Length: 80
Image (spheres, rainbow, N blue to C red):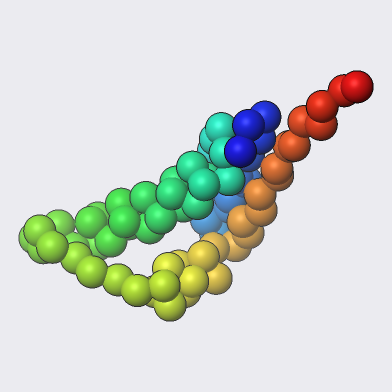
């Protein structure tokens, strides 16, 4: 959708220094970015495995295991 902008705020642990953000042009790209974060973690945890599979429950558990995750979505309205 045109004119959308999404920022994902994330904190990996209770340590405030793990706070970070990711900036995306759309909600869809933000959701793909979150999946990519999880896939990177899986690769880091399983470096010898070339094929790693997961389901939506695994992704939800990853997100639930974070100290915090929020998304800010900006929708620009047309001016008349």
